[in-house]
Length: 79
Image (cartoon, rainbow, N blue to C red; front, side):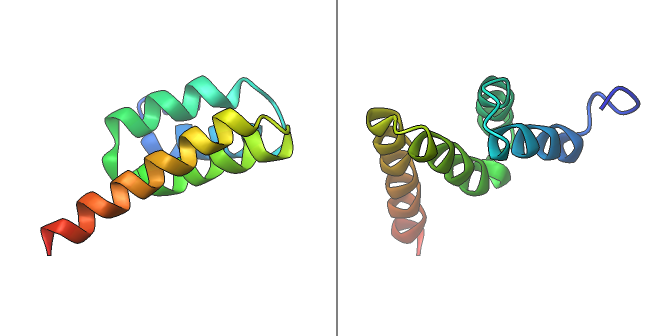
């Protein structure tokens, strides 16, 4: 990440690694990334939902589950 600070894929990989290891530092990284990079939204939101599920933070897990459902609904309405 230090070598390529603007790399979306590097930021996504770091945020994913942090979230999977239970490190809260991954949350703002992923949230910022999926706001800017819409193609990363689904995968990023799933990682956030899983992170909160593992931490037993039900409200936040449901929040990300709803965002995923809303995004899927928007996509299906396009077709």
